[in-house]
Every structure is written in C-alpha cells, then in structure tokens.
Image (cartoon, rainbow, N blue to C red; front, side, top):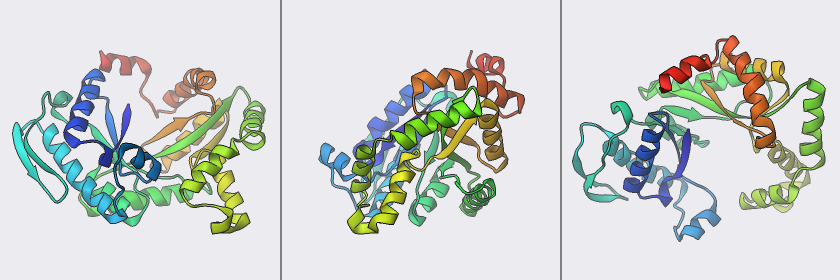
Length: 284
C-alpha cells in the first residue's frame, strides 16, 4: 500500500509518524510515494507558496533526509538544521516494522527530478512506452543505470490502465464506449488548463492530441483485452525490466473482482506473483 505525500504540505515529523502507523498496520507493507507537487490550486488551498522547480527538490532532499533519520532504529533524538528545515529535539517512536524503513518511490520527470529519485529512492516511477515493449526496456535500463551511478540499485515501476473483459471484443467495446464515445472532456480540459495546455498556447492539432492522451488514462499505458491478453502484456512488461505496475480501471467496483479472479491467477502461473497461500502465510 503506497501513500502519496506532498512534501511541501506536510511537516516531516508528522508525515514520518503517519507513515510508521500505516507501516505497523500493514506489518511492513507500506510504501511512501514522495512528490513535490505542481498544481498551484492545491498549494493555494493550504496557503503554501510553490517554490521554483529546482528549489522544490532541494527542499525535498532535506525533508527526506529528516524522515530517514526519524525512521532509523539507531537514532533516538536529534536536531536537524538545513536551509529550509530547523527541527529541534526530534523524537520518533515507534520505529518502522522490522528495523527497515518503508520503501520510498518518486516519479520525477525532469532531469532534476530523475536525479533526485535515483539518488534517494528505492524505486523510480516512470511512464511506459506506448510505442513498443522494446522502448520501455531501453528506458527502464537507462533508469537503472542512472541509479547505479549514484550507488543505488533501484526498482522501476510504471502505471497501466486496464480494461479487461471475458473476451477481447467485450473489452474493446467497453473501452470504446467509455473512453472514445463518453470521455469527460470538460474535466480533461480543466486539467490541461492547469498545465497551460490550451488551443491558444499549443494550437488545435497538439491540443487535440493532448486531450486524447489524457482521456486514455493521463499517460498510463493502455492494456485492453481478455484475461490472457492482459496477463501476457504484464508479463512482457516484467520481461522489459519493470518491477511492478500500479493498475487503474475505468470502474473499480465492477472490474477489480474480475481482474483479481482471472488475471492474478494467470500471473501466478507465469511465475510473476507468489501463490496467494504463500502471501497469506507471510502476512500471518
């Protein structure tokens, strides 16, 4: 279970304690997805001024350094003095489960963001190629190589938008009905406007391309098909070097049970997931 935390909106002492609570509830199965934020409306809602791009990651560096010290089983109480943070007599108990801190993930897209992620995090969240599995494999290897340059063996994850049906035809028809015929373009246009992507700024052709791109899962890799097609696509992505995928659906309540019953079993048989009995035994 990953919790996404905007570093500039949460005091690191509070965030560290919240994360440890979740870590104990999940018996060590909590991960932190650290983000620096971009949406000005969100920051204004909290009365926080967004920093310039480079400074966002400078702040995040101090924030994460403080978090890791709080999670360290060897550290009892400490002061932390940086350019952005000045913390006195910090105490953080209990410590994370098993004496190891939660897995930390980041999805920096810029050069600065990628450098921050591979230097500080256990996992890098990247966009899989919509062109080919081979392109994804190249990008995954680049991320892992960059991590090694910083002394880190990082995992690489991506996000997929799954539309899975009993048959290939059923899945494609459902996808076409929801995404092609009935996409919520008023919501999409609102998101694009926050990124200053409009007809005036980008022209009609590029604006239409961006609208379709966001309708198709906001950048997530489209995976449309029956259970065999979906499982085999996930297997190919694993073969390309991805360590995991965050999965979203059009309608969670209607689709998650079918995905659980039909796709996860196939992934077990392909050797990509532990059998559920093993998972349950470990949790116990």
